[in-house]
Image (cartoon, helix red, strand yellow):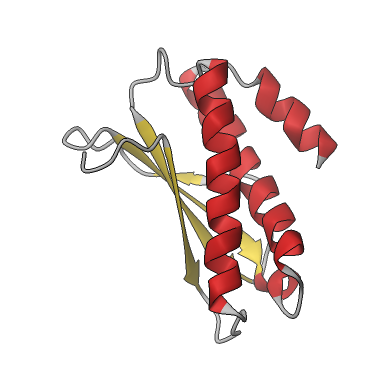
Length: 132
């Protein structure tokens, strides 16, 4: 592992829609990562997990998925690959704070489902999702 992150968030476009400015997308994803990474650490979410960090890809598509897609745990790097699709229309012509809200909700859903799958503590993430 080339970093000590517990959560890495990336975005990929599934449509021709252009979310602008691109800098705001990256900044919003980084804000969500920083906030929820602290929650992961403080809650002990990864203490008994079979992986050491989560790599989340937010797919900017046409639907809002409720359940994420899981890849196999990477034995070399220790990551759990996760992907979830969001409706890109929620990101068009909106301020960065709205992008943060959309990314935060998708990330929390992914963390909760991963926690359910691997029997990890998810109470704090449910609380945060309910407040969203």
